[in-house]
Amino acid sequence: MNQSRRNLITTGLAAAAGATGLAAAGKLADQYGLLAPDSGGIYGPGEALTYASQKLLTRHSLAREFRRDQISKVPFVNGPPFQAAAFKAMEANGFADWKLSIDGMVAHPGTISLADLKRYPSRSQITNMACEEGWSYIAEWTGVPLLHVLNEVGVLPQAKYVVYFSMDKKWWGSIDMDDAVHPQTLLSYGLNGGELPVGNGGPLRLRVPRQLGYKSVKHITKLTVTDDLKKFGAGGSYAWYAGI
Ligand SMILES: Nc1nc2c(c(=O)[nH]1)N[C@H]1C(S)=C(S)[C@@H](COP(=O)(O)O)O[C@H]1N2
Ligand SMILES: [Mo]
Image (cartoon, rainbow, N blue to C red):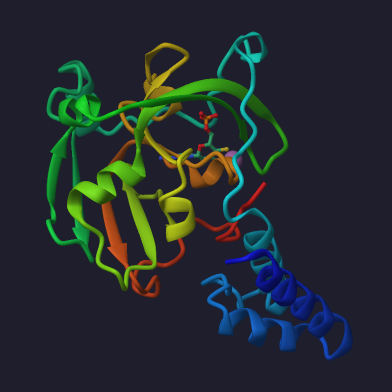
């Protein structure tokens, strides 16, 4: 989008919010494909406006990257370890059998092994993991950009979201295509130069550094590309869009 068009829309949203109320801003946001899929829920049009205005301002921006000497001494592990027997068995086998399946609106649905993912071009970045509870830590994440995997399977033009699922069935999440193709969104398998520890989501985690920690779901086994989130639910019990 060119800058003047962006200014126009941003100004339009602000004017609608001020003059005729948030509902009108929500309608305008919807017209431009800027309505978060959970808007109209408990947060309503105010939430829609947050998503719309943040998207317009940050669509192409990068999450802050840090220097190596800023890496936190301990990468904080939030929550109890995932203990399922099937997971433990895979861990005992060095995750040699870990696979990522991809389905939905893609030309070539299928399954990629962890070993194959590690052969794709990788990216490393030092970013902040920020939990909605207030704590954070800085670490270096290594992985394959989700964009690369999406290009391999061929995303259909009408696709709007990528839904990602954990082997821990309680956890899943979804992001829009802007975040899915963003260069810092990684299927991550490395932390601070080593393997990604199980506590931090090993062997494979979706790292979404432009959003709060709960969008970076651990132990990823499946991706579904879709144009409709309704049948999946937004994932988790927090706001769908958690831009920081
Ligand atoms: N599968 C799974 N993914 C998860 C969680 C979890 O408990 N299980 N916790 C989420 C939350 S709320 C945060 S803040 C981060 C914490 O990541 P960390 O353990 O590396 O600090 O992971 C997110 N992803
Ligand atoms: Mo969190």
